[in-house]
Length: 169
Image (cartoon, rainbow, N blue to C red; front, side, top):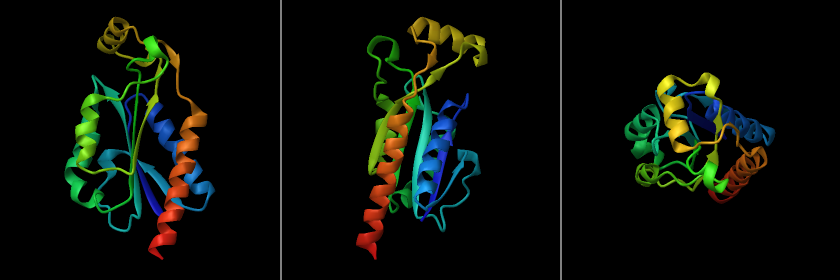
């Protein structure tokens, strides 16, 4: 199957999650590739889609919101999985909380599954405003991504695609 993994990432942490998903899907024989939202021109010839976005101020990045808006009708007719990556709640709970505003956006496309993964905070790559916001929010520095969970979810997607192929064929 041809799987498009569309990822909106500002500081590359979310893009790296997308790369791990692509690796797992390719490992079981799927044709998967990661692209930025700006590179999505058509979904013609695509069998399934994984959408992922970094979350800032409880929202998916504008570029991903635009993709969902432009392709909502087509996405509703494809197997779609979605994920968010961010630091909301990491300092207090050790787990990321579900971004409230992403939920309304996702209802437009009704993904088969939606996950939220913790992100990475490296103050060295942040601008002044971002450093101020993360400091005020008490976000913990470091890489909080759980690669076992991410890769496990990608393998779950691959398994669900196999089931989809078996019932469609």
